[in-house]
Length: 217
Ligand SMILES: C[S@@+](CC[C@H](N)C(=O)[O-])C[C@H]1O[C@@H](n2cnc3c(N)ncnc32)[C@H](O)[C@@H]1O
Image 1 (cartoon, helix red, strand yellow):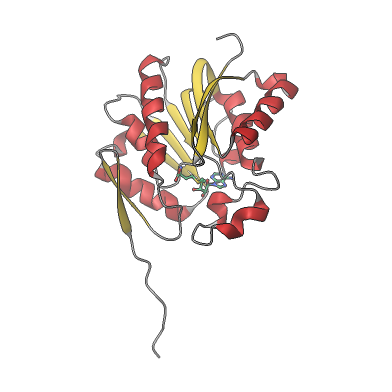
Image 2 (tube, rainbow, N blue to C red):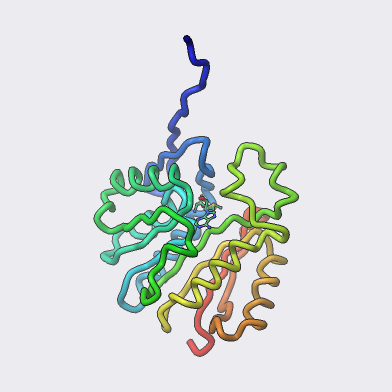
């Protein structure tokens, strides 16, 4: 009996100096996010000792590009088995496999209570659920951020609050300046998180990056 199923085709994209593979079951790497890698790379040079963390790392390109030339290690967490498989292959191709610890699973369960990180990169899904149909080529797991698009971003902020080194920085990606204002309100309402937004950068209608630090740093 013939089985009429299209095979999954692995694709490649240049991402900074890296060649990154992915396929249709994961989010296609977005070139503008090289800016998140570049910012993270600069922060790593000044960060305290210790490993870095990337939450919602997908196929690994943002964290891997940031790690080039760095001696420190990075934990990468993503809930998609397919994305984690590509991240492993991408790390291997980049010569960075020994520096990355890829943890495949929900971020809420992936980090040990005692673990602390000098830099945390977070790229959660941030599309409001009602708008996900506008992006039929993107997997829902990779883009659906719940009613206001910020369910997963709030989870990232929770984990950043718990696991960021006291003199470290986090780089959180959201979709719009309005979403970042909602996150800023959330940080005011939850002082136990001990986080503030130190600065942010907007990338037209593609996304917004914010640097989070401890209130006293
Ligand atoms: C916006 S994509 C970012 C992927 C990659 N960093 C990029 O920029 O292309 C969000 C990622 O979050 C992952 N994800 C969704 N829910 C998650 C969860 N609870 N824990 C860990 N990863 C999750 C998805 O699998 C997806 O790879």
